[in-house]
Image (cartoon, rainbow, N blue to C red):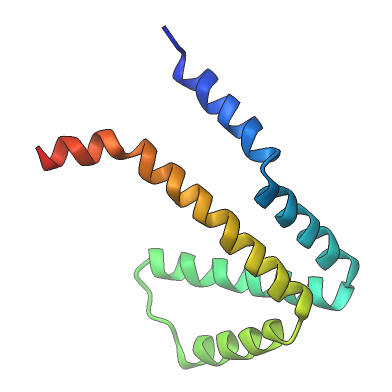
Length: 113
């Protein structure tokens, strides 16, 4: 009988060699070479995480949050290396979403039945 964790670990290793993951790795390496863009990216990530935590606590976003989000989004959109990274991340996310859909098929079928 197959150990499901061995299967998961094998999948993790396969993901690392996918062309889409390699492209994402390369895009991230390029971003890190541009200090200004990388700093903007990290700032944007940190702020997104803060907003998610706020949302999980049931707190509303303030006008200040909205203004900061808009300003950071504009700053990030101006950086070509960030746009390239986000494009590669979106391509990779499609694969992860497909894998999730496949993995969740037994539960979906269970509840549909």
